Image (cartoon, rainbow, N blue to C red; front, side, top):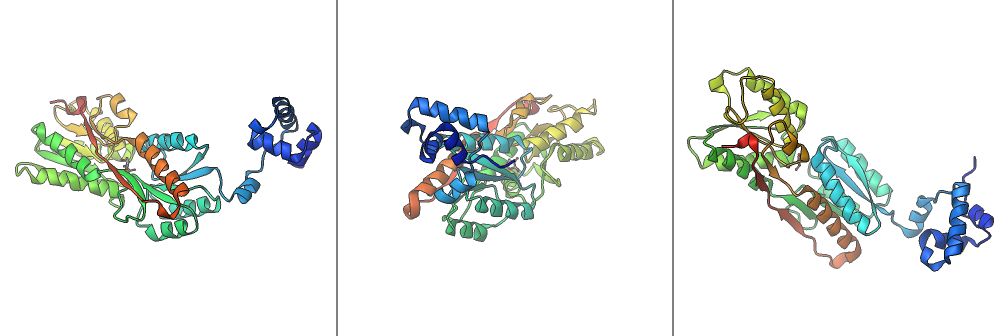
Length: 336
Ligand code: RIB
């Protein structure tokens, strides 16, 4: 069945094509009666506007591209919520891409969003893609780094100080009197993990009686956390950590699940546990989880605000690198 065109709608409604275009784009310029008549014909004929044609005329789509590491992680869906809230204020939508720690997928999404002529791209990058992002911007697509600090002042970025966050988590465990800490997290290709571990090491270095072991994981997921927790269970009691700092809340929830499966290990009495992000599931965990809070919704909102100001600001736009401070949230999993 041939698609319905603007001409078909105009003929059926007895108005000009320009009037149909005004009803679609500037209804305030058309009498209410005509708007209602044209809209009734659009519904009756099943007309769907061709955004590709509009994009060609306008040069830009009405959307932004957001590329995140793991869409299954509530941290990123909260960030997407903030991005969407700010985008909607300017009548824009957010297209979401998920890289799953895969550089080929990341490159494919950057190509796709450029082809789609999105207004701009927000990305939590996997590695150093500065050159690719420079090419993107040179061809008219501004980019803001989210959940990543950058030394490159030619890009705007919005993140939390993950080194400070890791230090805060370890200092909290040490303040409980715990001396055998374990950091559970990985892969080390993820900069956020590396920075959190660096922060924890800074805190431990201030206490000669405190040790820190690293339990690498292949993902930042509940499953990976559960595997790490099960690894603790098979150790002799004196060989287990007395406190665990998980690189994010999903890992911490998995560790908690594994420890809970054994009736003889108690969180926090035997092993204190803290995560990172403060996603909603942290407070809802079977042992409410202490965490290092990131203002995830605000990160997304702020990143889009920077992006839109850059898109509208032109060459004199000053890029900003915004770094929020992490916040310690204490719950039962580290109660003293
Ligand atoms: O995706 C990896 C982690 O980095 C997330 O849990 C969130 O903490 C982000 O900062």
